[in-house]
Length: 204
Image: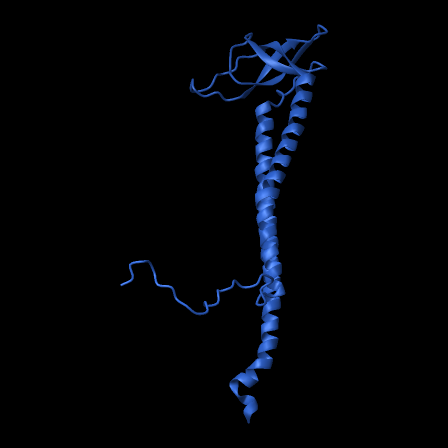
């Protein structure tokens, strides 16, 4: 037994295993490389293009709707009017249903007006209510709120994301089907050449 460590083996050393040389795989066809690049492009679209498109579209829709909100807010203002007739309130105290009611008000020029406004609550004739009017003093709908702009931005962003994902998935599926058709056609052509020799039909 050797107490001085492992025994040395004399003679030539066995050759080291070398890694395969780098370069393209000879078994990879051109269609395989195309499919790989399409997969990489698909992943990039989902990882980068989809968020960028959704955020851009969402911000654009929000900014556009905020301009509408600003324009409507500047063109309309609230005044105090009085109910021209009694309006029944909601059947339940915890339910606030908008309802139409006849109201009368005095415009900024002192002219008296009467019209039908949408109110959140009912009331008796002569009760004061707040209504929206335009610069001409005519009744108008309340201006859009910033929450409407935010909802529009989120909706547009989500819709854009779904559209980008659908287009990317459809494009990837079509490319793959086209590549598969080319592969099947080449396989069939090669099989027509190989099959007679493989089956022995040419040995007769």
